Image 1 (cartoon, chains in turn orange, brown):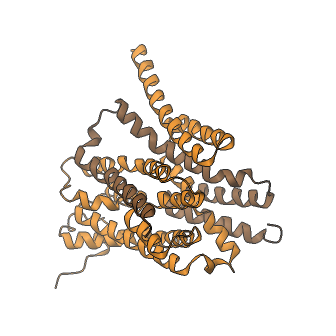
Image 2 (cartoon, chains in turn red, orange):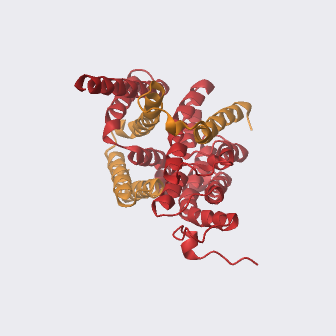
Image 3 (tube, chains in turn cyan, red):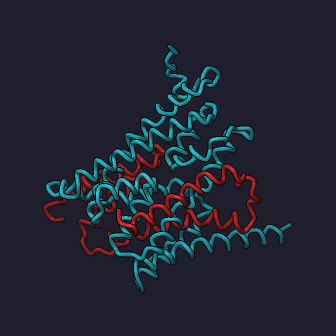
Length: 256
Length: 111
């Protein structure tokens, strides 16, 4: 019978002895514990919210199983509730996921150029904001990168997200009718999540992009509609980012 | 599952998988940082999140209801404080929701 992994192995502090895929997988599951504890109430809120906009338990479960992105899923509820057209829903939700493009390359940079990525097509599915943060944190603490660890980490978080959604959807929106303060807190989960995500990516260089996106969202929402405001904000912010980069490059060329 | 919900979930889920998995195979980290595509990709994510935050807060901010504005301030303050303390999106999100709920409960006679 294999020896169970030690605390140092599980936390990734003992890179020399954490070698077998089984131990690495267990270490990943262990690292997923705090993420799972955080995911459960948020996923529960999503399940409750999904029933609130008229989705069935199966539909709520399906969204968590297939999309697996908290921000996009909460936004999907808002768009479904507002009756947004399917194409607008898809465009907005896909744009929301673009931030994930940078996670894989950033992780590989931290892991070293020769890091194994044979099964990346599978474990990358679980590369959410928190999983990315936990994996990068392990590398920063001197832990080693392994695909088995990524599978354990991703699976633990994914299971918590999907099971929390089902629990919330089964409980249903009526479950909170006698708890208005709790319902109010859950209702604020979406703005809180977006603000936390915003803080996690905030840097001085991105301030112009954020300012343009925010201003365009407010103006177009007030003058036209919420859906148009979303599209205008994202497009205006992205264009501002491209222009900002071009101007800075030209300034650099002129200075040289 | 209704077809329109399934289609939306499948397209968005496929896009999410592509965003998470393909850069690992396509060596996107080797893309020149000053290329137009790199700039566009770099700006779209922050623009989307900034837009979504503003859009989600706008209904609260437009409300003339002062207790709701106090709840909003409590929630936003808690998210910022929790994120500054522990740099965790999950903890910050939960802190904001708890602070908003507690503020709502404290102000419930007038909220």
